[in-house]
Image (tube, rainbow, N blue to C red; front, side):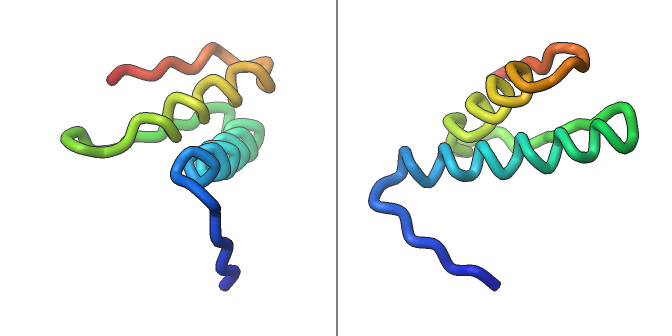
Length: 68
């Protein structure tokens, strides 16, 4: 296990977005399609929005959209 401390929430969310986008991108290349779903409510939207933007910018696959 790797413990990483971030100085603020924004940097944490950007790192999470990079992780999500990377794993989704890897899966997409292997399987041809991928989905990522999170519950509604008070879930922060920063990471999923950033992950969608990152993946869309670095992919030749269909665009990824975020609804929330």
